Image 1 (cartoon, rainbow, N blue to C red):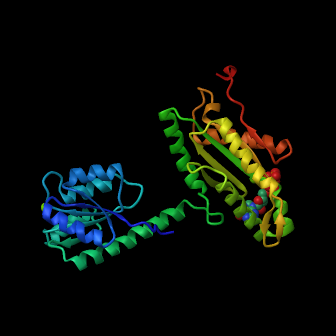
Image 2: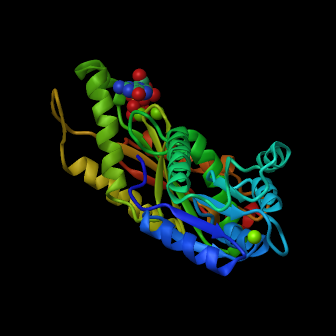
Image 3: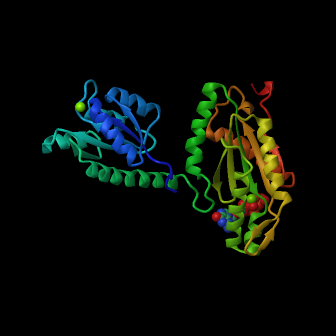
Length: 310
Ligand code: GH3
Ligand code: MG
Ligand code: MG
Ligand code: MG
């Protein structure tokens, strides 16, 4: 779960020689180092593309290190940014000010190389831990897809983005057919394997920008950014066919597993209907219900809002 890539670190130091020396030490230790000369430049870089670790000087022209710490914390970045403050201020009162401003740790200048790297290593552990916690909080523990919490939060953001830029957006709900029977006839563990196998088939059928979440029991939602209704129907059909045409291997034997699908897209909502996570999923759910009623193992798209609805 931990990121195998080297960590990105932003080094903020106004003094050019100091900056160069530190940059070399950090690069040699395997960090991907970016630099800034003061707090203002650093904050702009962090807001544009947050790194994992910030190593900042305290005294700099313009925005100083303590203010930078405060501004970074106020920005509520989505990932945790670990902050190590480099400081010539070493009274207990100053250190309290730095930590209260949002620094995680501090090191006195001039920094001893071994001590600096050891403190950064401790920071790295925190960064990796917070990443793991963050990942766990959005992951379904059985099937490894995103979970419902992520779906609700992220689909809300996708809808906002699509609306702002006038882009299409589609969702599909997939519900395994007669799944209760699989549990009843082959046991719950086989049922669990089928859920995992289905998630895997979906994952390998969708594009890189599409993503899947487990909505509940044996129901999954796939979100397809930049995709209109017709293209989303084609994706659903591809997944349906992949399930229906090849048996799924489980420890109690190979099984035919089918699923029913309901597809909805932003373009299906009438202008009077507010696009929300609830309205979009509700539309997809109505279409799914039709697939079930029509005999299962099929794809149904919602009807596009007609002029009469407006
Ligand atoms: P339909 O074709 O109408 O969708 O029928 P169904 O049997 O798939 O639907 P129903 O809602 O009757 O049953 C869903 C079953 O999914 C019941 C529940 O025990 C099972 N289920 C929910 N979560 C899990 C899980 O995590 N693991 C397993 N093995 N079964 C689960
Ligand atoms: Mg300085
Ligand atoms: Mg169901
Ligand atoms: Mg079902």
